[in-house]
Image (cartoon, rainbow, N blue to C red):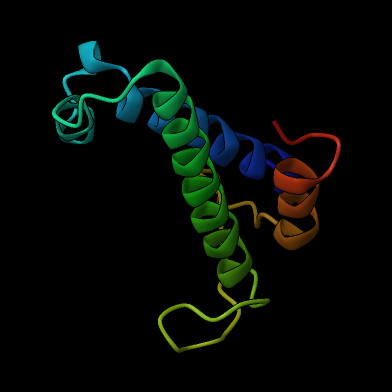
Length: 106
């Protein structure tokens, strides 16, 4: 797996999480709490957009922290991320930018 694939999997996770958070049928705790708010359709769309931004920015920052380009809980250092075959996943920062903010983002 390379950095682009790794970032892509994280971006897919972003979409899955936002869907789980906003779909009552998902059974997630977040969806249940949102359902109690009684939002109209426009408010629900706005909240979905906010949650998508929060999850995107969180995952993007985590990827940058793994690559040593951002702080993780006040500690900034580069981590070595490997796949299950022991191959080092490189260039996470550039791949994350492209995936979350470039043409590859959604």
